[in-house]
Length: 443
Image (cartoon, rainbow, N blue to C red; front, side):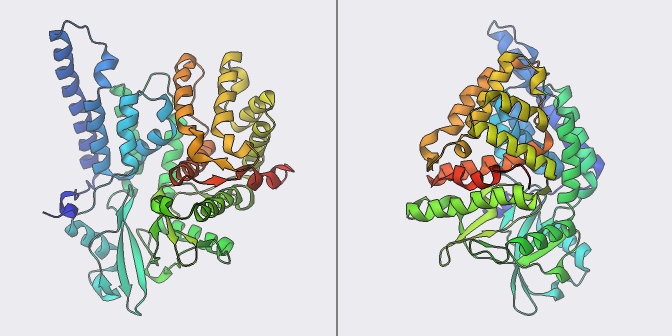
């Protein structure tokens, strides 16, 4: 049996079917709790309820069902793993992290039914060729190559059936699951995160909206020598299928074998793009998944592939984030606290000890933007230092909050760029890139 066949899972389409998957998760966790409890008692231990719920086996059950459901269910798991992993129990954080790169694909019958719904029963007639083997599979949809009747090589981003209609109920069901099974610590309030996740996911599930974002990035970056934006095929795009130009390139995370100067130039361009998105466009593609970038060797350009997770930021937010970057660069602790307040952290309401902790978090997390000169990401150990620091966070549970939503998405992008630069061993003068933006607070 092929790997593709092994990776197929039919997506539950109805609310009842998806609720059944959630019930299966809860039931699996309950059975695991009973089994683990009996094991602990037989060894003469008196297990705590939280210890039983948060076993690695229970977390694996949750992760597997989220991956099978795709859509909002999987996306909530991804958001939690990306943005709150430093505050999750290690067992759950480790398992949820698998969701960032894991998704099953649709069986062929379900795929064809989806295409029929988008194009009609004669959907084959719109293409001279269609490849049933997906190029990629993610939380919202999967990508297939095709050839137009004019001979153009394109890709079709095809949404999983039932995803758009189940977003609100999926998010509510997953929130209930986490609350009832105590898979999240009591002090974690993810209400705002889940509310915004619904709004963001509804937008991501509207491929005509993504087409608009794609066009906006084409207008902004179409003349760039550093980036390539795929052409939109509007006539073949619908609310559930997005047609774009097929772009060649090499997976960007495998480029460490290149000449270091090429890697450094590449990452410099990606950091320039990140801060241009924030401070000039106020429109950012916030998903820094490495699969969204391809390197084109002949031209040394980067192909940007996915715009579904694009997010608009207000001018006020961009200016307030400038204040934070400026405060970190100036090593001004009080200004960092005030900037965090403006961004929604409520830092000044917390204890002095927690303020010091938060200042240290920002100083480390944004260190590459604050240090003048070339910053060696591979030698920085940023991730390890933040992980060590996060252990102190458990001492401030009464003050901890889910990051403000705009910060959550922005830091997903910036953190992803830092991770990529570390993976490639890049050296970039990130401070020089942002310095011109920080000279004045206006945009």
